Length: 97
Image 1: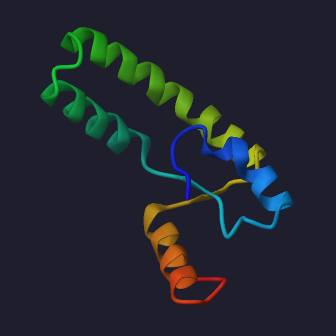
Image 2: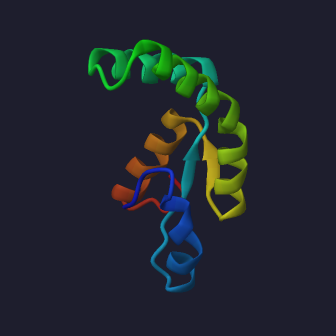
């Protein structure tokens, strides 16, 4: 299992080697992601609030392009609930969730 923004980089190689059970890019409401990220970063006092807001807005705007890139690398866009259902199915021995 791999997760993170660069996980899609290994999808094709894993598929080629027969190691890929599934590859998903989370599709979440962008506004909710922005707020969750901002709340986390503010609580951890990572940087000044102004910097965090500016960075958050930049990431908010970039998110559709990031998702398109991950899809282009072989990941399937899906909501978190759908990904969890499919992974649970794989763990239970049902290859299609």
